Length: 420
RNA sequence: GGAGAGGUGACCGAGUUGGCUUAAGGUGCACGCCUGCUAAGCGUGUGUGGGGGCAACUUCACCGAGGGUUCGAAUCCCUCCCUCUCCGCCA
Image 1 (cartoon, rainbow, N blue to C red):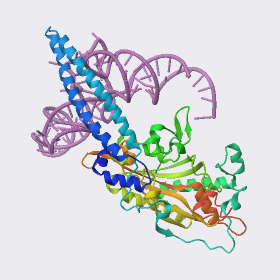
Image 2 (image 1 turned 90 degrees about the vertical axis):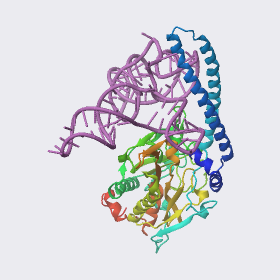
Image 3 (image 1 turned 90 degrees about the horizontal axis):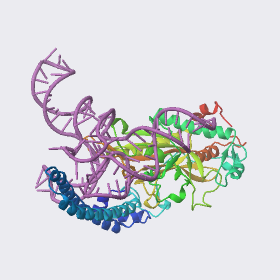
Image 4 (image 1 turned 60 degrees about the horizontal axis):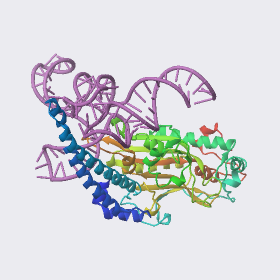
């Protein structure tokens, strides 16, 4: 959520941001509601002050044994006026708040302006596409029925759910443990494990709601949601708090399953592990002081890159253009890993700076050097999403005989196996 | 799921026959005084958010959340949420 005062002072900029993000939000209406609200607030305060002042005289009169009924009768009128103004004020405030919730974050000036992902900008690449002296298989040909099972999970639940079996399950677990250990031991993150089911308020705090409700799994009986990413519980961990010195800066890393309905993406990237309704992910979440949050963003990209480098996988980093940027993000880098069998780059990490957008929604603040209370900046990034990393890993490290070599960094997590 | 207790400022903790409480008192914290140093002591200050004002300042709201009663609500009524204890169920 943006500060209404920021919108008031930068209406043109915000309108441009809404347009560049292919979003819809009625900024003029917000400005109008804001003006109405402030006027009502002034009227309310003035009346209420009078009411408070006069009400205090009632007990004084009574104590002197005087009749206060005239004063009380007069105050009944004012009380009714206060109530009426207060009601209108409440309605306008509710409308304004609802309107503010659907205004997207403003992209950082360094973000390329563009309609969609074709306008994303390449930042850099690492490694190169592996050359094969045989025709590399895609991950389905390599692993379906062995390391992976798609058929039976579909029987259990439906399409878009995958099973990892035997050594495949071990490999997936190895990836998760490897990534967690790496972030904790080499990058200094604090591991955290939080609920996978959260409330409507929590989902609103990070910006999934109200806009993306159709993409979320909802438990209607309790009005709770399955998390689409660990970002949601971890970022909201400090909701409604003023952080103390030892809580900011803060770097958390969390493993969690992620649940996404993927409404509207049917038929897109449906092959194998590429797009699932449930998958595992290790997520980095940072709480930063505003003046350094863009340094933190760069650091997080490197933290995610370190994993791919340790796994010796070729990848590239791109800056998302405005049209591809998510609702809440001010700037996002995607890490795309090369999957030689599939013949595509797959997004395995999305690293974003939300600036104060989520902090304002979730009400996460801190005291700066001058003891002034202000909103923190929140950032998060995958490090990494498991299924696509799994794809790239087995497709890159496959051998002509169908076996898969294990990169050295991962071997300790696979009982020392060099190949599977 | 059943029964009971409770949710007050950074923290502890009064206040629940509605009105000198602008939330007592304490702790902590900050500044000052005192002081050989430290401690103790003394004094002052110490929340968040909104509105108005160039500013000093002023005003409103907030005692779990939301409604209601009243001239006036931390205090009374209703609904909901959360925490704790006991019972039941259970990995």
